[in-house]
Length: 254
Length: 219
Image (cartoon, rainbow over all chains, first blue to last red):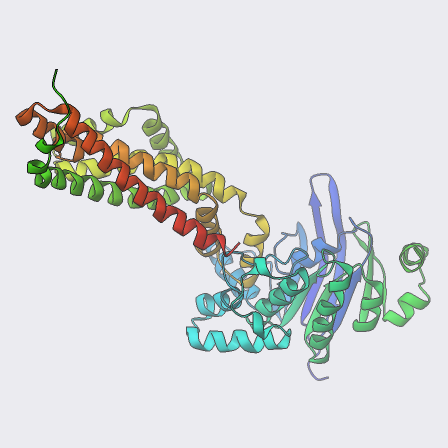
């Protein structure tokens, strides 16, 4: 490891909605190729933290860096818009509710970014879409519309859409929380595949078992702070904090 | 009392045909412009900078609060007075377009707001800018969901277009009036023209249903 500069670096992130403070000074550093899972009860601020990495949430204080570039720079409105669009192209985001574009075919969902933002020609973009769909095991759905897909398929297409921009990192915001239990595995398999390819990932999840399997490091958040973090073995087997123990007990032996 | 005798109509087919041509031309151009302008107004009202937003709001309020006929008179007869001379057909198209654009803007505004915010977030997370997101993702979905309402406005516009006869355009109703002034057979000609409107409307509605079916597949 010669390159020690973290891929994602969040320092002192603070965020409030009115009087409600949802992030109380969070630090998060993710190395290239590292996979970090963020767990915690709902309302702990884990989604807000993830969304502030690509500036879907604006922090009140603190810094976010992506591969040595400051994400939340102070710039004029137009300059910031250009800057953030550039930065976001390097971060893939997968949402709980998939957010596929319903008016576009699977192929167009995946190619619209590369075509409109990277100026890729249509034939090449379609090839790219096919490669990405192959990765998520849905090549045969290339001309389907989102409405014809199951939840698991939609989420796999959403992952393919994000990957088509060839991002440096992937952010997963409870990617399997909206899925029927029997559809969770197909999405998890795709994420594991990405892990094997050493994609840098931050995964906000409610699935402890999956987090334990796939993550290099786990962050346990509660009430806007990081209560505990460590390797999954340590954190899940012998958590140091009482708060973590309580949370895990509730989750692992419901 | 005179019986109905439609044999008076055929000699005037050419005249009625010309009227039909103008009605169809003015209505289709105005429909198109009113939807495009409606999108523009809706976006400006929702997302425009205040400098653009308030004049548009004022203009919409003005156009909703006054009759179409008055607007046509203002555009055609009024503007000449300050040196803007627009030909009748142009004035008719502008008047109908703007009048219906205001209604379309209101319809589209609701449609745009109703598009799930997740759509915008997904587009922004890919790196699309604000306006790129609106034009590529949000507006196409709003157009789809509001298509039935926009279609009704087109049907209304087609019928309302008869009002441009008031600024001297020989559209369908006016062409019938010309024929009546020579034949004194109002019933035959008005019924014929009613049938023609009905036929054009049927075609328009068939087209709209066709589009609705087509985009319905993608939902």
